[in-house]
Amino acid sequence: MSPVVVAADFGGTNLRAAIVDEAGQILARRVDPTPQGAAPDVILAEIGRLLHVTTDASPERPAGLCLAVAGLIDADAGTVILAPNIPGFRNLDLTAPVGQALGIPTFIENDASAAALGEHRFGAGRGTRHLLHATLGTGIGGGIVIDGKLYRGAKGLAGEIGHVVLDPAGPRCNCGSRGCLEALVSGVAFAERARRLLAAGASPVLQELVGYREPTATDLQRAAEAGDRKCEAEIRNGGHLLGLALGGLINVLNPEAVTLSGGLLGMGETLLGPMREAMYSIAYGPSSGTIVRLSELGDDAGLLGAAAVAFERLRG
Amino acid sequence: MSPVVVAADFGGTNLRAAIVDEAGQILARRVDPTPQGAAPDVILAEIGRLLHVTTDASPERPAGLCLAVAGLIDADAGTVILAPNIPGFRNLDLTAPVGQALGIPTFIENDASAAALGEHRFGAGRGTRHLLHATLGTGIGGGIVIDGKLYRGAKGLAGEIGHVVLDPAGPRCNCGSRGCLEALVSGVAFAERARRLLAAGASPVLQELVGYREPTATDLQRAAEAGDRKCEAEIRNGGHLLGLALGGLINVLNPEAVTLSGGLLGMGETLLGPMREAMYSIAYGPSSGTIVRLSELGDDAGLLGAAAVAFERLRG
Image (cartoon, rainbow over all chains, first blue to last red):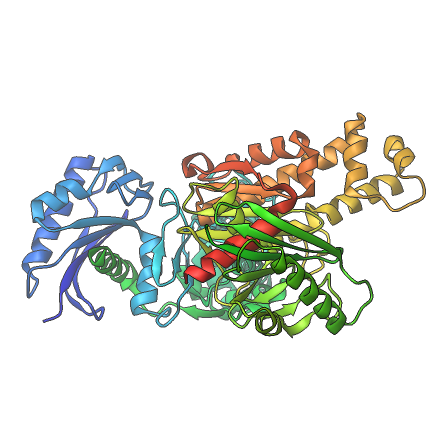
């Protein structure tokens, strides 16, 4: 039998764990809701329980385990520096208690970096040597694979493409700067664009969809699909800016492929058409040979990414 | 004796060649003016002659040779795709004729990429593992060292940091896009800023310096040094924008160090102060651990970069 690993993906909503083999097949999986409003040690206990249950379901003893976490990770030290979606997860050693309890080598990785390696090994990035992966969701994340290996940078922060500045006079970003990619094009940024359209009374279609609640990026998408030109223009503008940012990164990294995942892909060609056009319009775009591919891993991207990291770390 | 290589650096003004040992010592050097208005085969013949003369001055037989060229390079194929500063250098196989004539392994590299490896091996980047080098001159170039090795990307274009977009509504760039770093902060961009100040009659100090000729970035710098606040503000604004661009790249690459070279460094702290402030203001700047160092190689950066590439390629 081929070796298997335990892969885990921790978000603010769900804790997921799975047994994955070297071909990227998920042999068993478990999902628990993330305990809401609980102290870190309660969440840690729940994580431990979930990993035990998952490991018990494995056809053989797993060779190792990797936890993918949204946040700042020190992969070498095995600690979470800061996980904004999980209250209390700050300067927390996660691998030592988990590894001791299960008795197998345990690793931790930023979820977007793990997703990049997952795409490279099991998904849309198969067969490439250098890969840039972008996660287009509530926020914007990314990961870089160089020479077939996950590139972490000096302190494990590499791949944070949401915070390249695209407009120094643009809207304020969560990070404190102005006009970061994430402040212009992300689930949060598109919700803000929808809010501005509503405040200006510019979109009756959007207003009818949203009523009195807060608008979301999905509302903007649905209004555009229903034929609202103002909403469509916001998505197209977002795609254009995303393309400029990715085009700049192609000039810096010259990867063989850029792979994309995340909820914003639901906006389809309204987002992706202007994105491709802008991406190839700048500088060395046409000479770069860089192709764009959409993720093939769907909802399992986090788990398969964690599995890919576990296999890579076990190989050393 | 330690092995030596031939290093060559070809620009629009001068052809330089040197014998360099593994410690980065230049044991002999020759400089010829680039033949102006000459056909590519005349320039090639002059390059061949210069390299022969330089090789004859070597205390021992060089183990290899590397040519650093400003332009698009296919390092694997050994060809110049396009060298804007040397007329006729387009889709030109440079390594085969030179290598055959001298009978030693011959390599070619983009000059900014070579400079990055030169800083890593012999200069301000010594002791780092991951390095981003930026060349701040007439244009903006760059090179990336990852895991102690030059990173070229899929097609050898990696490191072209002059074409990250910093302001989609900004001035038109040579590359056809708008608001690239190079269109906002470079020798050319600062000359354009000086031109605008003159056209607006905003700087008598600059006007007196320049008279009726075209202004340069150096004029802007001298006027600022002479106390002109408008000129100083242009340089400080350029430094701010440069810092935002480099800060974004730190978030993407998380290098241990950013090294800087090029003529714009003559602007000193007027440029570098706002640059550092902006660089560390965004996102993960303070957590990145990335430090900034100025080049230690001076005018020999091109030659020492070429030598570093030759030694790396010879090691395989």
